[in-house]
Image (cartoon, rainbow, N blue to C red; front, top):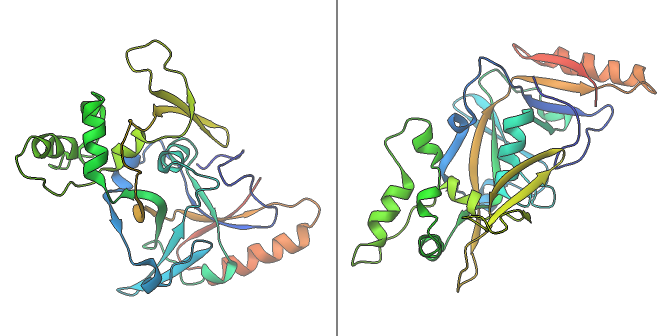
Length: 258
């Protein structure tokens, strides 16, 4: 199940309504829910705002676009690692939950999920000797695609071919505290998001600035809705809990601690 404690976006608000994707010992690896390569969207045309959630009705099912802010999650890997360890809990307006069903998905966008000048980045990663260290999520979940292998072949081609971006390469562009020292890979960094800490790699030396593009990087099932307890205002929270429970069909609603 989803755990409590600090997240990149802070602590959960008492009385708040949250969409959750809970952890389970019988669940699937997180790589099964990652979109690799990340999908660049015309967020303006879709009406997706950098704050809040945007509903999308497709084939009779309502899904929710959620823009992951870089203030709380500077690195794309921050959100992935938090989700890996704690599950997902994202605050939502109560008015947006009424149309959700067990088939609804939480579609996540991060402003640094895609690199436009991928060729420059791959060349820098190759020069640093780290290309073979990139773990491709698509390949990890069993797809035939292995982006680093494609890139390795293309970099040795006489033609400058367009390069696919790989979500695994985001783990080689992480802002964090250096812990590499004199080791084989002094570029290793430790990043902290909320109360989750993980190790990744700093960006390789590049002559050009990295050109980021917001992109869709994950699609998670919504396992349930949570209402956060407030001992100082139990009447109001219980009312919200009942209102949310009344409008949902086939989806569980829980009262949880912050």
